[in-house]
Amino acid sequence: MKPLILRLLSPLLAASLLVGSAAANVPQLPAATPGNATAVAQVLAGIEPAPGDPRIDRLVASPEWRAHRDWVQARWAEVRVRLASMARWRESSLALADCEKRTLIYPFSGPDFLNANAMFPDHVRYVFFSLERPGALPDIAELNERQQARALEDVRNALQDIFERNYFITDYMTRQLTTPYLKGTVPVMAVMMALTGHRIVSIETVDPFPELTREYARPDARSRPKKLLRGARIIYARNGDAPGRVRTLEYYSLDATDRALHWYPEFIDYVGRQQPATAFLKSASYLLHDQQFARTREMLLTRTNVVVQDDTGIPLRHLTAAGWGVQFFGVYAAPIKSLAYGKQPDLEAAFRAAEPVPPLAFPFGYQGKDGRSTLLLARRDR
Image (cartoon, rainbow, N blue to C red; front, side):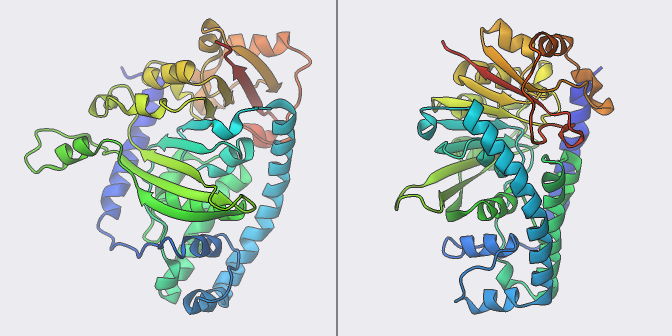
């Protein structure tokens, strides 16, 4: 019998593959160019860009775009309150003197640039990986009026859960990121960059293992993974950064279970190569709690020296066994019913022993919206 977590993950992976296969029959959308990527991201984010492109000027004058702008701005005003609370926590509890030299590793991330940037705005490099394909930022100005309205609606649907709950729901996201007009994580990350005051310098495909890609693409290849690795690199700059100062987000789509990693045996080493590194784990379905992602868990324990996570990340027993010091914030609540296998009696006892535990003023984790956020800050000195 499959472990319970694997039984949960397998249908999601299957759904991702089926939807991706169906989406392959849809004509390719025009992709934004480096010159207009920031303007396109702003339009999708409900922000009116600087005038000058007649196509975009017409779009932002339309009633459909103005309604989209009003929807995003109303919800973004609420999100900004949450982000301000996260910033206050970061400044008081997560001081990292070398943050501008650090890489952030975010497994099972989806397109969650929003929380990564809120917690680690000064990390110079992000590495995300999850099942969802990277896709591309569509040049919405090239679409007709009906297609533009559909694309804007798709953006709203993709943002709904992260705005309201502060996490993505995987099976919803599988559908939301494979529509005819919104494909992959890159458009959503670009929107979040625009909302948080960043400028996109470039978006490009990236492949750390081109030899394997060529091998698996051969017509006579004897075998290939069901899910091929796909990567994107976004170079971006924060408004106010010095000229020439840029940051990098690498996003990889693959099946990262130990079993599937035999197709990409060096992937985990590649992710953990840049140090010093910080790990971020959030709403991760307790995937690191059994052995199916043991290589990812071991990499995080040995290649990073700071971990910020909720209770769905690395189990407390692995952190303590490896000699990590752990601070607790918020409350520990038993997992939601569908994820009951993630209950940690030792973590529950640790929260009781640490009382009083500092509260959290922002939602973090599956039950954060109900005021039951759980956050662990772990550090390794050696």
